[in-house]
Image (cartoon, rainbow, N blue to C red; front, side):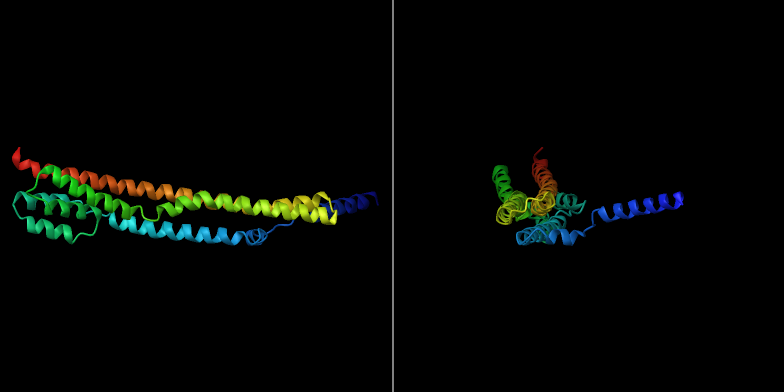
Length: 228
């Protein structure tokens, strides 16, 4: 009999522990509790993803350069076939080719003038590569602010309700606070995603810019080679 009582008591303890265990909640249900300020955060996340994917595809497309591109340009210049060199540069769609094409157009002018023309094209191509990167930087800054705003608005509502109803139970207060913190957490995560995306794309732009500088220097060396 005593053993049966112990078993029953243990079963009751297990059942009570299971009942007291916190209920699991899905991610979407949790985000839904964040309120209407979650919608601007969703919009910022969508914009950040769109800009990142669009810029990544664009940068990778223009950063592809044939390994023998400059070798062919050099051979054509050394043989005096400037027309073939320009044709190759015009038919190659990347910033390096556009810079080289501008240099080919200025052949015969002083080296300084050629370099300045190529630098102008290089700045324009850099502007195209960096287009919309500022959007990611902006999202990285304002997403956490939207999140904190949502938390502040939610906390004001919570304390107003507590003051109005006089319900100071710990469970009510804790439950209200964790719900209001959802927007802050979401804003920080979205801001972090935008920050990482911006820095990743900036590195890709820098790599392309380095290729442009190397090609420009090599082109100037080719022009000066016959005079050595």
